[in-house]
Length: 172
Image (cartoon, rainbow, N blue to C red; front, side, top):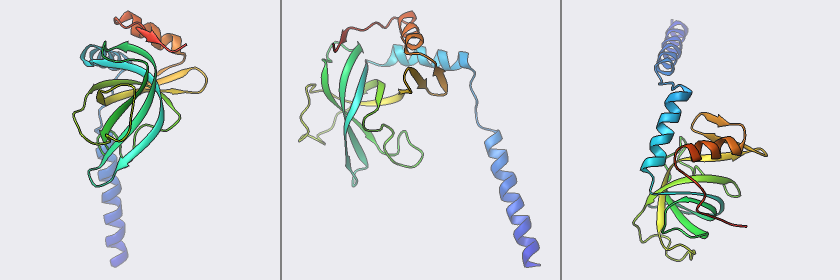
């Protein structure tokens, strides 16, 4: 009798899990592109850079990413060099860990983040940012933004240009 209850319980759990996954929202490429256009319009700072350092404050759950900016697309206050990007560890992650990886290059869509944390880390930019939905570069030339893949950086940069973004400054 105990075994039958366990089987029924496991079957119900699997059924409920499957039902919940079936209810997840799936966007089309056109819907992702519309959201990305909105991200471009709404982000005061957009830049490309490589994560060079990750620092965490576990008590507050904040992670600081020091990023070396290589291209600036939007944000007249930004300058090439390093910047601090802060985020609560659980904001953009499923497991509570940092979303950005050291040594990887991203396009960051930033907004100001007012905090006195991480003052000991000196960067070229005095402004601190938080971010949403970064673009991750992979392989030699590809990029991923949400679930939308760009098979070349040129196709991503063309999308930027079509939506009013051009490189304002670039490291040589």
